[in-house]
Image (cartoon, rainbow, N blue to C red; front, side):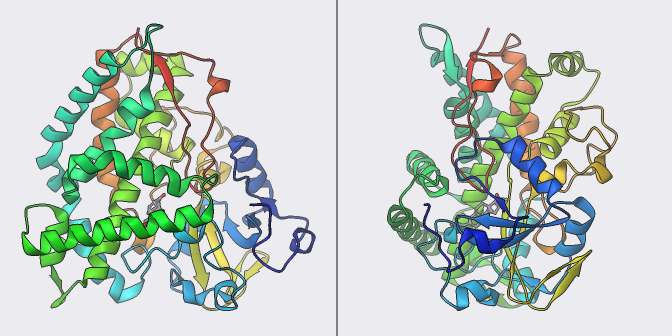
Length: 417
Ligand code: STR
């Protein structure tokens, strides 16, 4: 992991470069350093240089700029062979053809069906099932308490819930959920050797391709079948495109919602006054969810877009062929957007809904409404069932997983009270 993946030595990369820590030992410190490094900052991702945007207004503008594309072939470092599949983050970019990796008219063709299936109105239909999963997992939580009363809220509740929801939506059988959870944990972890990561991605491709073939033969009423049957603009999606969308949905729907639910619980437990306001009905759960999304974003850095022309941002220029990351956690703490106290968690903050955590523009998260429904069911149900819920360790002892793009805790030990 220490070996640079490009020819440039660290010293050549400029004094202002923020080195992103693969071990995530100080996320708040890193978020502050990124903001201090400028609107557009140079970062180092395991030896690979890139730009990142750290401010709300400029990120919004860049996310609407058609000169930035997802196509990895627009990246000089990739085309020159300086970045290869040996780079541990390559799977975040070279993820197959899907709505996540394609732009323009083709992107609309790949995305329409998915975004239509995930509108707030369509999601009302699956609300009862999400409520049922939630109640089952609350029972599981109760049953999982150790002799000391301690139980891990992550592995028993926050992790399985989104997997069940996205599994139901996409038609992935429950017998596969534990396998998928294990594989994605290894995929995202920077401690996983790169050959193992590439091998598990290949295994997942086989798994998803088999699933798509099965659904092609026997379509059901899930979104995977709908993608297979869709004819956007008269053209059906190819098998590769359906597989790409399916894996993007499972990876994104699973991983990011874990962060949202856990980060909200953590924020409330460490701000008991605000928890009391919520439990007394003075402030809604929607406010908790939006403020958590702003303050402690599930996605820390989104990789990557590439400039097809020189793009000027303030005093800096993203040169044609260079890569741009969007640092959502820094953007959520933007004082221009949220005021001088942007670093404070405050569910009554007037700008709490004016965050950009789901992105902006054509690629804006198609699952945003789904994650809000999930968290909007899970959080009140958890605190209603266990009003005495509290952390089993001091908050400072909670650690992050060694994941460079996601904001994910190792575990979240609680006492149910
Ligand atoms: C993981 C690996 C894979 O097979 C497919 C994808 C595409 C969608 C990506 C996902 C990735 C990683 C997590 C992402 C998700 C889209 C939204 C999610 C980036 C690369 C976020 O964290 C916002």
